[in-house]
Length: 128
Image (cartoon, rainbow, N blue to C red; front, side, top):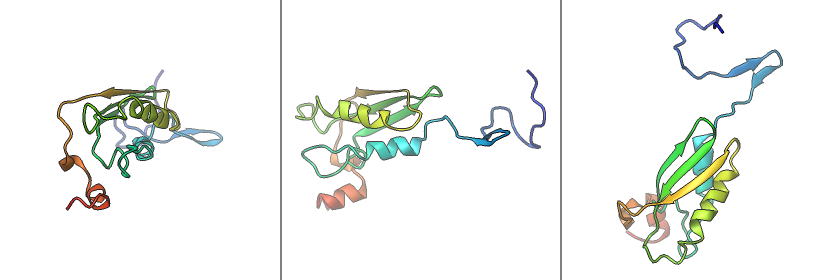
């Protein structure tokens, strides 16, 4: 299949809005912002701050097919939420439009410490 009518200056592999005779086609890519917003809905039950602001999320990878992989840690290996939080994270991310799967991997390196918290989290917990 040949591509005709390319926009001047358009580069190969550039992303642009899809179009049909009926108008623009909604993008099918997963919004990384929406994934981060979903992560911010999950709270450690013992701390009134979401897991993203706590600095528990180390990496988020969004594949072209809609699969999302999250590397996260817990505040301590003996965290009482160790069994609950990964499932809650997966469930929240699966609710994001166009996500086909969500997988959480718990990692311990580097270890979490309070310096990973956002400024908002530190303020909320009076840690100044």
